[in-house]
Length: 139
Image (tube, rainbow, N blue to C red; front, side, top):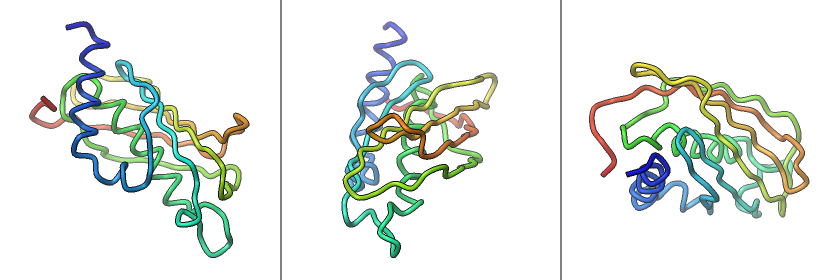
């Protein structure tokens, strides 16, 4: 199998049991080795008491993209630590995309940067995720 075929099959295996990402309404747009792009249309149930997208929703999208990127090698990985910075408010009707890119992968650890943008390409949030490989495979 090519690295891209492994990434595609890994994403498919993860998506089949990822009820949380489905529940939020997320979609996988693209995967590649060490990379994932996911999207989410912000609806009323994603909004907080200020009428903006709840930070946990933006984080969930970034976290899911991080998860698909670090698991793209058919090696089970979990998030060990993350840092999220919110840079601009997100409103109902916005279409968010979270692009996760591998920065380093070695041994059992990986580092991934995730950029969350709105439909105009404006950066709304940045996340850095640190992964940890555990025993097992996705398929």
